Length: 431
Ligand code: IMP
Image (cartoon, rainbow, N blue to C red; front, side, top):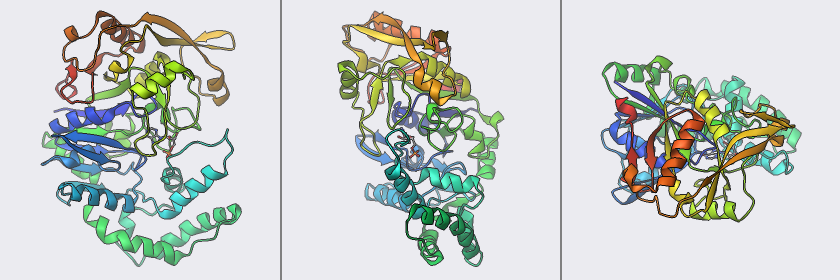
């Protein structure tokens, strides 16, 4: 019995898709536990490309159960679109292979609209650079105890009262922003319009997961975004609105933390970030541009260019602690091929003092300066390597040094987008 959580250990876009796909082939149940359709990844299976955003990766494979946990915020229209796109590719999503927690809060069109209005109204230094999917406003309503949850669509007699309560809040905000108010009828029609499409998937997810656990099934928890975008432990306020660290797998699904056996942190061999916020090792020079071009660093959801920089071991060591990472999957090492020298951030300087952590204060995060170690690059290629012997000696040195600095072992080394181009050190399901 082994249940595995996969999380991004940086700011998202670490290359989770390939690793999660590899693991989901070996899992029985794949669970999303936070975020929503702000996430996005592409799976390539037998030469066919599938773009997933909200649905757990397992959904494209036969005989896997895909589960959306209560920690997710669910946009029913986005779900219906995604299911429709998969159907066109011959992938059937039905009640048999997709279950959604009854207590999952819904993203409504008013959330998406509010997200966009706020971003448009922000100044350059307060803008978050969100994906404009309504994620933040939907989580606000959840915590404010006024969200419409999936189960609320069951009883249409009690739904109007819930909509009224929601609109007291939203129309006050809309008046303040000078935006037209929304009628209860508009929201009611929106919800009734999608109810039939999503209610068949509704389930008691905590119960279902417990049953599957007792049956000895392998459960894979698929995190979205990355640990540095965590609402509590990330670079607040430049974060997403959910907990992205591994502990959320338990709260966002209802399976208790003692059922989790292994936490795999997906880690890119350098650093990227999309959206605003601090980024100590960012490179605004030709090396940053080189990493972006070689690494195809453009967002899958918004198409935005990602900011690029050197590997920051301070940050990854910290996220290894906050997520309890058992081992990492190191990705995109080949992007560094051919560089004469490679820098790694090993500590920060803050106001003349050396520190080995990212401070929580926004002001201090903006002031930290990276302290680098410089390693020799390698001239050969790491792309496509399948054993350690295929790697140039300096590349092995780089990987070993990272392990030491972040205090976590490499469990997998991914050397190209192809699934077989992977060096497996430790199978998380077999740990
Ligand atoms: P939100 O999640 O749309 O509210 O966006 C908040 C922050 O998280 C922004 O900086 C986004 O760019 C970032 N973000 C959200 N989802 C992802 C993701 O899947 N990958 C990388 N960054 C993300």
